[in-house]
Image (cartoon, rainbow, N blue to C red):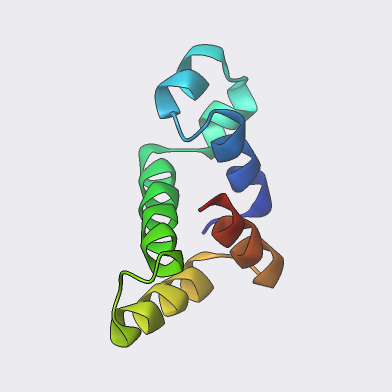
Length: 84
């Protein structure tokens, strides 16, 4: 599940998991696994395409459904969309 704190970590290291591994604290390293980094990166890429109008209406709906199901609340979903 993507949380606001995970998005803060993602943003702090500019989406670079290696940066977190090298200079992150133990809490960050424990909280964010490879799956989390991939999941956030994938959604950010999809939202970028959505914002640019490069996806079909059906795919836009899939993206929005994925965001809703993979984030813990509406504020987190908004923060994720703002990263794109």
